[in-house]
Image (cartoon, rainbow, N blue to C red; front, side, top):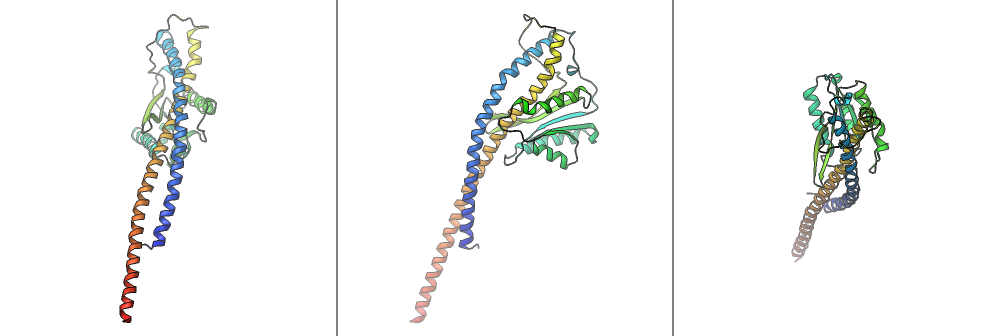
Length: 285
């Protein structure tokens, strides 16, 4: 059995750990509120640009663009959004597991796929397994702007245009609530599932619909990436807040158990001392 000093030391260290996890929980809760607001604020822009793109693309059979047309798939791209840090429960592992299982199922060699990693955890995961990471970005802050990810979003779209891959899938955690984040797979390119219930036939487009689509489609694809990143940031903070709350609760349970063990050991030691004193006194009589 551990000594009283050892038990007391464990109680002290566990209390310090619980203070840290409690502080991290509160920080994540504050960050979650901002991240959720950022994701919601981006929604109206996404809806409007999708409405315009869908109306042009679906409004005329004569309008065509390489980003709207499927082609034979020789190589698949995977854009994976993770965090730069851990301590977020299953936030990173759930996304990486989904991508890894998909790659193992669909591809037989590294030549058949390419990975674009947003986040240190995803980059390290694929590099350690010798997978083909063709582009990466890390160190994205909590209050990131579109300018921070503009380059990698543009590169992802341009690599599809120049034939580096023939389709691009995006994997990230979709924020549902503070206690639920769902792993989401979205086909980013080609843009074959653009739909809108709105009718913009009353609008006049200048110079013409084709030229407008040429500019809007890359922006739309880049906006999908940015929107997914904002969604993932909210999910990350929610997952970390939940993980730190669970860690704090577990620390409290451990402290209660150690305190009970400490009291029992202390009581046994006192009883032993009394017994020894009484035995010694009896031996002197």
